[in-house]
Image (cartoon, rainbow, N blue to C red; front, side):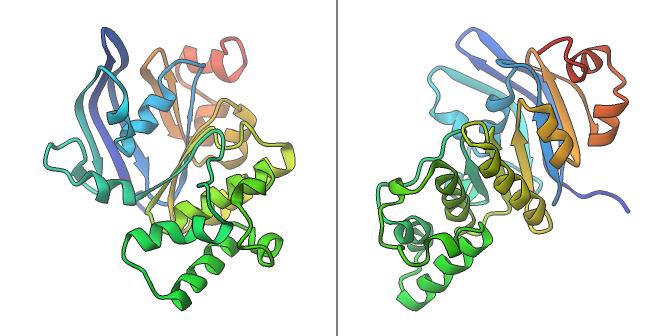
Length: 253
């Protein structure tokens, strides 16, 4: 069966001032799979991720050429509706950033922005997404507590629940477990594996073991260029390119 593509990148170049960060990037990200973007520090992984939800726009002196197609729509078209594009994307950062409000209000925040006002409906949404993020049983008796009082691992699952509550199609993770303890990291990885039936998941990771555990598809970037991409087993076990071989064997890091 042919694999459906959810995000396509065509001839993408990104410059920060004079610095050419992403160079002629072409790639396809499969629908409802976990794609891991791997590569050494500073190679452009996070910049690429920020192009998918147009967060690249907030950087100073940035210039972008080429296309990023989400569901066939070029999101860098000047007429593109950025708010609608970002609604398609849930984002998990390296460190969780719960909003300065209660656990309940963190989850209800997005649905309220999009017009949901009924308390009963909001209650259902909050419960549903906290359960989806495996957090409900831990917090159901203290929903009015400030989210900042949760442990960092719980905060990251809260941020996942908050992102899912606006019903995105795509989950983006920028090294989403790098600040977490092993048990919390395991929680997030497990959730990703459960959620990929419903969402396209794209994760930037510097942890090759993590890519081996969760990825269906791998994109390897080096110095702003895509060196190799394809099924995870193929890239990690039998890469075609010498640079990929060196990276997955630990020669370059």
